[in-house]
Length: 300
Image 1 (cartoon, rainbow, N blue to C red):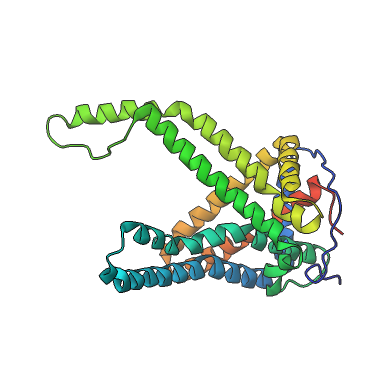
Image 2 (cartoon, helix red, strand yellow; image 1 turned 180 degrees about the vertical axis):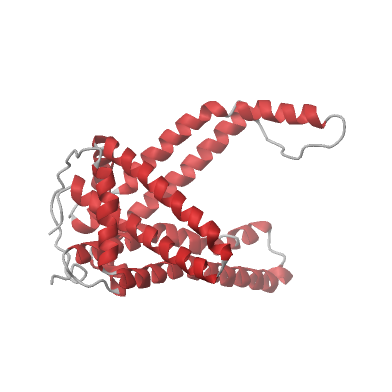
């Protein structure tokens, strides 16, 4: 069978299609089929991904924090100004930033893995890094767009909240004035309510801009900006299917969460909960690939 990890064929264009709303359910169904085709291999790949995404950044952050402290102790006799300490404070922030930049690259590798399974091939751990063969700078650029977008949006939200209600103090004093202080805080929080809708719109636009960009970039010979435009257009033309998909996904995750709560009943339930969680996460990943194939020109 063809191995899409070794030589992914880049398509020059991507044709956007509008699909029925109920296809949102089919995406999850077919995504689960991709998982069920090779469940053990998917669990192995998922464990590797989570290990790289969670454990390594934490270890690097702790190591860089220790390096920062050691440098500050070594430079302390020199009586340098506080700007040096501020500059060194960036060190522990580098691993999380690197993960944000590299996330589209790794996720694109997962899309290559999905394509391999869909074409009858065997899923391999190396699929996690398959996108390194296809101009990884384009995917890192998308990671940068995501990072900048999240920073700008969070700063805009913070500015809007501060402009509307000022600084919020959640330390409610005790005593006879506690009720009045709480009422004042609630009044100030109500002033933030009109901001919920624009914040949701901004977050939705950012998600739409990045939703299909990893598969588009790893399967098509297009620029990052072109992939972002296609992703937004694909989401806009298929709002019905994406809405059904989102509702079904929330329901699925709610059921998984309910099962996870029962994990305290014993080790057997804990193991079952972990397996179901792994299956749900893999189904989500595979369903995104299926939705890409359904909305855009399929690869291969």
